[in-house]
Length: 292
Image 1: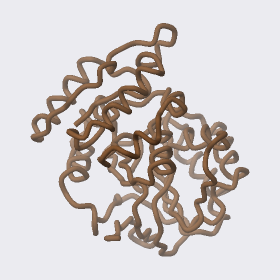
Image 2: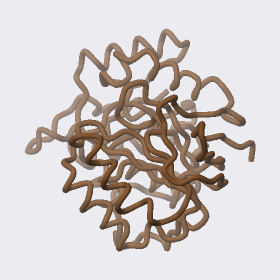
Image 3: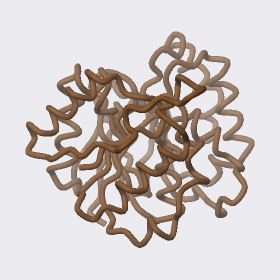
Image 4: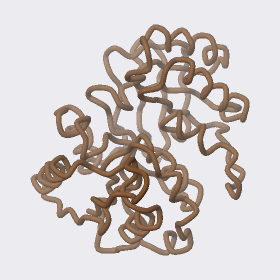
């Protein structure tokens, strides 16, 4: 299992804990060469862009590895995208790509350039994984239990717009989706017929408002079959975000579920992106992962 840092640098002690957890699961972690580096200017980056991109590409192209874990988020993944070689990535044997938050930019790249599904999960070198037994259990299941037929959700999820729809899962972190909209060189992408997944952390409500409007005006929501929302940790009061969702997203009229259990909240679920699922927006909101 390759471990890399595409964004911020992991805490060394927390990284060691993550390695111990994976080893306890019977896995063999292999650290990227630059995983604990620091950028010469920007303390929020784990080494230079070129080195972080190199670690990611080398891990993906190493056919002895079964998966690539991005160990933490922060900021910086979007800086790597133009430094990757899609032809080399496509030539490598496909494997699991695991991470969330800022890694949304990499998930999008993998979907568009490689046509592969990926896993949106808590970051293994952070408290969201290491200090949360439920989150660890969900990621363990993602790695060792076939996803076909599994049902994901949580007891406090709420249906805002009822309905049942089936489509491929797409999305991730709202801030990153907004950041990559309109990037030159991106293929014409469409969310038509798909189920959107959105969550965020640490953004004030006015910023969530602006980010949603960015996606609305770009056409990201056009043709979506349904929407599943995750956690909005440290994004102001949950009532404020909920009111914003009622104002901006409920009028879209597609099946819509509030707080399905993925993102940066407690007991965060590991969710595959790019696979087909059925969103049940009813009295027991849930996401059923399909066999095809």
